[in-house]
Image 1: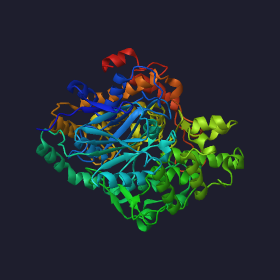
Image 2: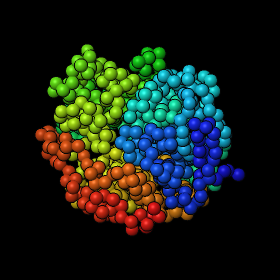
Image 3: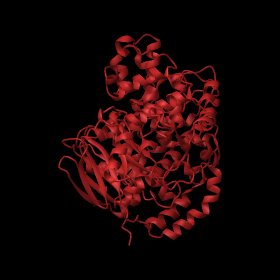
Image 4: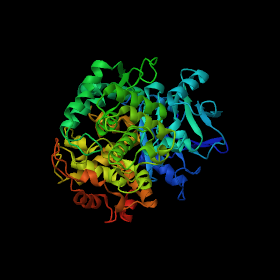
Length: 608
């Protein structure tokens, strides 16, 4: 008989011990799994105001009930904790194959406390944990680390690791899996949280069954969906997220020259998916349980002997391409591989490079900070040198490694005008002036500005979700009804994060009725669509509650001034989102007061 869902591994690195915790069924139904359950566990285990990099601050690993099952696009897991970058709630999810293998070890989640005396990695296999010496691999990049561990433990293990950036506590270091294919949980600086514990990697290998009550019924349910599912996602299979570069530029959604320009048509073509497919694509990459294969695989650039490695996603092409005016695709491929090896978030890194390029242009930084680096717009070689400085915290890179807000404060003067962030977290590569809902989603996101937290702009382009009341595609410039739509979208996406299901599944036609059916077959729950959405809302509100405890209020629900001023060209014209009007409507719908704090009644209704 398969084990029950909800087994969490509690690890203490300081004492090198571990124990297991079985989460009660009623709690699981309320928070499902993934990031929702991670927030619940954080609240239960951490009662004091613990700084992000304190040994008492947990690094949380979490799968969901769908992870690794026959459910479509279910090869996801995530990491969570208090963000070293923002000092508020942090979460980052990732695909690949690590999550499935972790569940085969007999666990569904893990909380890691303490700090190892020396560099360490964990080896989790079939219900057991080994604390292994990582001093010989400390300092290696993510590719080298994966190869070294597999050489020791065998090719069948799966490795999640940090690179030099995480070791050096760069506040926007990520956690990487799948070796040279570099699947990345990038945002919020959780790689620094992992590094603060002297934890280089978590290695998993297992042969245990996943907790699925009726696998045949689950497979039959999924099988009925597949034909229409794959047809709807043909474009994603063919082009992946790089297919967004050209259309995003056309509608004014692409960040260009540190968010100052609205048009860059010829440059976007040079970074397009068509260009990537024609000249550099090796093959598609499929995460576990994926029939789409949106991942791109290209040849090595830093190491010419590397026959294939993970290619750039849209966010990297935008933030280190268009946002820095680098229109040479081979150069962006090289920068992408460099960041994957060093273990950096490409969104945050691209924002840092563009910020410094503008400072350099305006004479606010020069040889004193950069030495001989000629950081002009479009100079990819200079970008590469700056990125190395940041990852290793060398000289000026030590200041930049703290994030945009803190770097700007250190530089002084009017540097803050060019740091495009909110709460020390860079905006991702979608412009709020192109889609009104993005402005509201960014400013209220539980983890800082994030295009996936609400994923609302998909409902302003071509997508609907009638089960939650989004039954028509909305005008992207209009603001009427956007607060209601963003609330519904955030609840939906936080449910998806708790399930640990890829959000591209929505494009394929996965609905709440499918989720209800799959959960019944997997864990035996009878949850209707309304109860599922309530779980998503509960997850969102709990993260807000945690943030409020750390000082979050209306003052934090903001956007940088640059994305609230007009551009004179591009597909978004002179449109500006009326953020304050939408926020007022949003607070009422959320059950928050004028300061953005959840009312007691709201929390009580959700059992918080």
